[in-house]
Image (tube, rainbow, N blue to C red; front, side, top):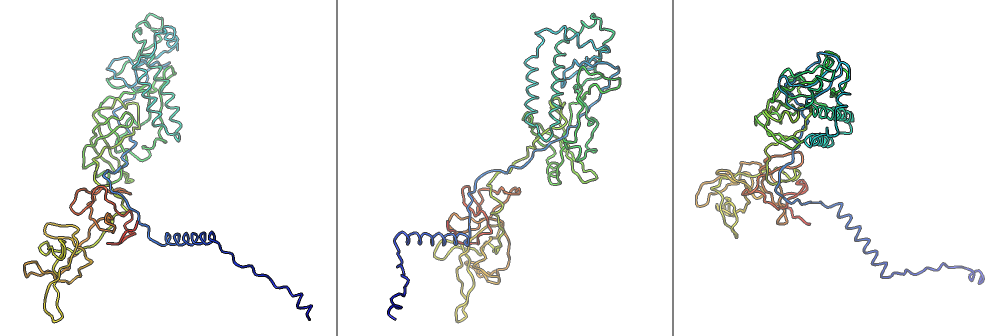
Length: 465
């Protein structure tokens, strides 16, 4: 028995060793858990600082240019050589191009050209302007534009070079090419353009959404030294300085532009501005198109069918606030003659009819805040008054039963550490922000702090930051 008892093994229980480090770590861990829980269960109120500003509205459009354009067709077959500058004005009877039946005119031009036959500074400036304009508007999704630009530049350089030898054009008469080269003059005055696209006779009433898409647009660039047949388009003339741009808009923008009658337009290519007369047309599909007619600048954009523009409309300036801060709140409307000052402070309030325990009629001063006013009425807080309360006019016996209500649009100001409703007068809005009137008696001021999301607070709620 004794041996059996002596062989019994008892497990040794190690004592709990607590040191200051473990206790400190446990306290910090519990604190983090509590803070995390409070963060996810408490309301998050974000403040917004009111600043002066204006709304940025997207007024940029890609417009289609409409001009009085006449396509001139070749009367003879042969190789065409252009001598008039593209985009330059020509008078009736001025030389525009020559048709070479033999194809030897280009060789003659090359043989008579000297090293001094280089482009002038003006010519180089024009080419640089075209290159910069193309690079700033190029869209990789429409890579075909790069080929159009390439052919356009080749043609322009050749036309500029040909233009420089016009002073010796009389030499052709004695070069032996006189019978084979036919010089062709402009039938009327206008601006010369060496391309066609099928939009030459387009009118506002013929506009469709498809015609406004650059990706479906095809331009036929007319290049010198190419063989043409009689009757082929050889160039076109823009015969009128009056021209127009057409954009597609919605109903609200159409009404806004028609009301203005004339709109200031900025051309994004050169940042120049001009005033356009407004007309509109709605097609059978319900698409709305606005035409802006100009009396100048046609020659600047005579080679372009699509023009990027910005409408310079009157900007509404004031205090810029997010739409999420705006809330609508109801108030009692009380005649001004029932508002007085009293109580223990110089605060505004009303005298409400009350009764003592023995039924004696008396009045009590009820402090109330004023949020807006009309000619003879105040909007007052409805938290201290009830429908059916009788108000007594100070220094009089006239009574008024509280019943009339009205609503105001405003925000919650938190300058004083609690949500204080401030009425705002909205001047203009977009999807995210509104411009409200500044310097109003019961409204906001610059650098006030308001609640970013009005749905997260209630009236007079304390704000903990």
